[in-house]
Image (cartoon, rainbow, N blue to C red; front, side):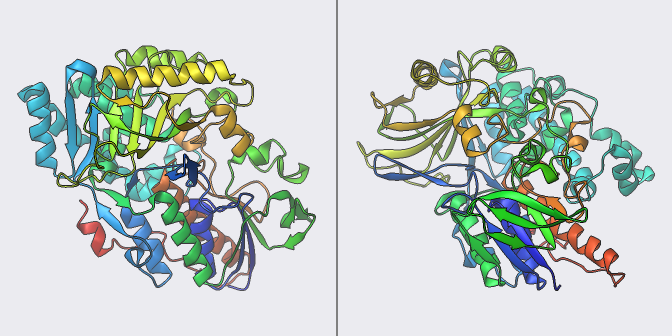
Length: 522
């Protein structure tokens, strides 16, 4: 493939497409404005400790096995991965604690002990439905080409499988569907939370998003060094194929010649000619002119009302007591509906649900806790409105949010140091890091049946300019960003083959066969 490719942004999607295209012989240059690779998957220094600064949950490992295999490598040769026994620990003040496990039957038993035999049967039925939705959608949607309506996807599935299409439940609300499986509001709350994995409210998302629970049940993996280590491995993989990865190299403008993308201009003034430009930024950055006027009409802007959730994220180095943490922990609010009403109204939750990643703790039952009295690294997340471009978070509001978070943890039995050694990121801070998003961390919210078809696909209205990343098709999250990188590489190969009237070029890592590892994660 004799083509020059410039990739804007060294996030998971951009690095994946860079590695795959470089493996096919393209001359690839990745340009990252920050000093690190990984985009949101970064590390933050607090109190002398390096804390994971972005995504913390690693699922759907098969996607990355495919990417590395397409480049003649193995994931486990680049990062150390360990499969979690405990998927997550969930707490509701004095209303109990529930662990979900990689072992399905262990989860069934735990749900039964937590909420009774009827709840155990409901969980079994829910898990089966989530698995069915995933099986129906995996190839035609998650791994398929972007479609602007459901009809091309329905053709891929086949009319003979009409009952399975209806089983996707795109027109049913997620919260209501969960009520069919769980009478216990705590379990409805627990499984509704999966909508937030793609930045959406469980009260506005379609029941289709129940498939996220199955993706997690297929296997959660811990990476030594966090997701940032995975991003560094992808950058090394791309460089091993001949790509060049440049940090501290912000792109100021996408250039176009004769109605086609022709390269980029850096903030330094340096021009890098390219036949293909891949934007691994939020598509809104293109639509709002952050990369020049030539490309403003290349993609539609995401209206502020359609943005996904943002987040308040605390990076803390603290002693903990009173609650036995595992690696992934969730502490629920007492009124979930009020929490999301407040966010929809543009307010931070008065009593938030809090996710805590205890970075120094494993997720196996036999893993030891940190030594008594030792500080440990925590990443703490609370959902928030994506208003970072219109709302300034004052010191008083930041402290108020911190105290609300601490109150939820204390109510559920977890105490942190006071004062808490931490650094807080607000939607305003996320907007500064990822301009034109308002701090939305997942692109467009998956609200309503049509939302998934309205996400930006790899192709844009400007020939030669493509998009990839967690804000594009198929969805948000680490594995989905990698799938978007696979799709961008595959679509670029198709378009180049069509332009040159040559035989179709196949990019490895697109619709490939499952790996041996995949079989072990079901």
